[in-house]
Amino acid sequence: MNVIEAIHLARTYRRGDGTPVAALRDISFTIAAGEFVVIRGASGSGKSSLLNILGCLDTPTSGEYRLAGENVSTLSDDARSHIRSKRIGFVFQSFNLLPRATAIENVEVPALYTGAAPDRARARSLLDRVGLAERAEHFATELSGGEQQRVAIARALMNDPPLLLADEPTGNLDSAAGESVMQLLASLQEGGRTIVLVTHDEHVASFADRELVIRDGAIASDTARRPWRQP
Amino acid sequence: MRASQVIGLAWRSLARSKLRSFFMMLGVVVGIAALTALASVGEATRQETMRQFKRMLGTFDTLTIRPGANSTRGMPSLGQVEPSLKFGDGPAIATGVRGVKRVALVQQAFDLDVSYRNETTVPLVLGVSSNWADIRGEAAAHGEHLTEDDDRSLARVAVIGVDVARTLFHDEDPLGRTIRIADVPFQVKGVMAPRGSGPGGASLDNVLVIPVATASKRLFNRDYLTTIVVQLDDADDSDRVADDVRALLRERHRIIPPAQDDFTVGSPRATLAQIAKVGTTLSKVVTGVAMIATLIGGAVIMSLMLIGVSERRREIGVRRAVGATRRDVLQQFLAEAALISVLGGAIGIAIGMGGATVGALLQKLPPAYMWPMIGAAALLSLLVGIAFGLYPAWKAANVDPIEALRS
Ligand SMILES: Nc1ncnc2c1ncn2[C@@H]1O[C@H](COP(=O)(O)OP(=O)(O)OP(=O)(O)O)[C@@H](O)[C@H]1O
Ligand SMILES: [Mg+2]
Image (cartoon, rainbow over all chains, first blue to last red; front, side, top):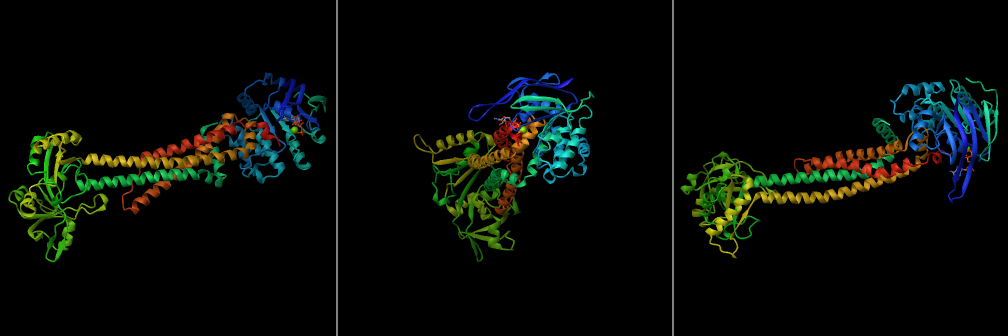
């Protein structure tokens, strides 16, 4: 079953002066449940633009995006917020933790928007899973980059989403911290979670099953990095 | 989001930037404190004025009739007034006007020397009919009050106020002693209960009463009155009774239009209504000023919230990315504005009530708190927070998450 179906996606921005910028043009591919896909491409090629659409933060100018079979390209802002809340986890290059909140409070943030009761125990067990149980009460600003990114991963897992999207998650980390973050992300594939990760780094790309290369807003290549096994 | 979560989130956000929160609420604190304090001080003053009038008049269910067309103010001596109110007018009102319970007659002077041995004082000297003390609801604290017999027999007896007793007798018991009022000897038969101060703070105890018939025939040698006090069966009936009294007196005094009345009918209730009205005008002005201060406080909240929104774009982007709807973000920022304003209001009310208490104690008045105004102040602070938080919250809700998250 395909988690992601991109059908002739295009995204055109308008600059301040009104001139159009075609960031994505005619992108089509599918991603099956449980796949770990890496997206590579030069700076400005449209990787982040694509990830925003896959994450339901943005909608395509034309084409169709199907998430688990449902066309979500025309949904309202509220409906897309609910999809992000329940089905998508984001990991950013710059971590994006709330600076005036503790690690555990940061992990809990996504739970605020599900309507469910607060679940501190789950947040704690997720921090434990990313190896930061003893940092729970530390403020985000008191953590190292690698620690912050691991808190951010715990946050992305809070509502147990089937799809994880990461935009250059190791871009701001040194190689040791980057390695541990990648080990962690790769481990999350187990249990059938789908991961889509944007990177420039060849070593990071080596963790994935499959590689999409984007050039000038279009798919330049789509290759299996290692034989992908149906889980 | 649950309401408790919204409030908890707002509380944490405010608690973690205390200095900013302090400046945010400052204007509202000042405005609401002013509103609470000024309203409460005004209320304490108004209540004290009422008490002073009550002590002066003894009772509010009366009409007072004085000689002259426009004698609403002041306390003229017998020698200075028109001789238009006669002794016969009193009984005529008592029998001729419906709704009249009792009528007391008064002759007053405050320019007579009263002496005992070497001590002299110049109190308010009142010649009164024997029912005067009853109408006021006053009993003698010591000895007896004047009786009908005293009046009938033109007895030279006096009941003195506590100030007079203290000045003339010091620690001596005044009962049975002979004092001289303008050199006429009178025997003290009672001492009045202390009354305290009247409007303007003057003592109401520097007073002395004698039978009005004695006063008229043996002291003043005048056959007219300075005041007739009419007690009503029903205080709510005072307008109608006043009209009837006026008609009766015009007839008795043979006044034919267009000639003016040679007397004035006054109503303590009307005077008090006037005072209460002055009170409300004052409180309107006060309310207006404090409202403006509070609105300025609201504007401060709005501008600091707007700065906060632009500083927290990334936070908004993160919340939106992990599933917050526009409405969630709107609620969060609106709750912060409302909470800070309500906290400011609560602190303002506490400060205002403290200020009002100190203000009242400095004036030696019992503190009074104008609860409706305090409730309105609390509501106002909430409304200000919501009204001035709405625009920043709307701005926050419309932050583009993609834009905000771009590194
Ligand atoms: N909001 C926007 N308005 C106008 N142009 C935009 C906007 N966002 C992106 N672009 C343009 O679209 C193109 C693709 O941008 P995108 O951020 O997707 O690239 P990227 O592959 O993620 O690059 P990088 O590796 O530097 O992050 C770029 O030319 C960029 O300048
Ligand atoms: Mg990018």
